[in-house]
Image 1: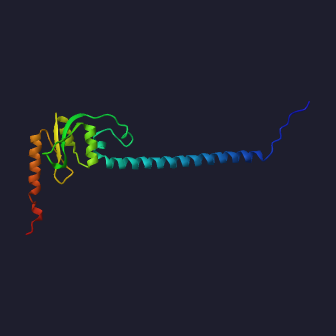
Image 2 (image 1 turned 120 degrees about the vertical axis):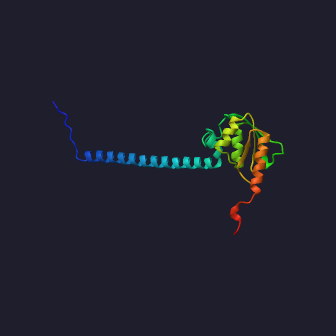
Length: 169
């Protein structure tokens, strides 16, 4: 009977070792490329998010809208009934905003400022009357037209009073 004999050649072991080494190098290279791609994508997302926050500070602060869902966000927000007098003119016809999200979008596009206290007042009133302080991006918020008119007139008076720092001795 013949017996099956295997002859082991000496060049098989180094070849297997080299193939394993190449596979390991390929895996490490793919891992580095993947991590670099993730880092780039993270930086792009962070840049996009920071630019969005600069452009839409009020929406970012008072809603759940973000750069990811800005175009598809459909919730209209709280029912607020805001009468907004444009151009610091409380004698003109107001622009009406029934929902908070629409109002916040308007404020962001106009680059106007809204504080937490003003937002709380707007949400607590059954109807609000708002205008800008003359020559400013700050808002004047009143719970009624008469309240707004009084605050507006007071702001106008205070803006014309000179401060003591500009006087020379």
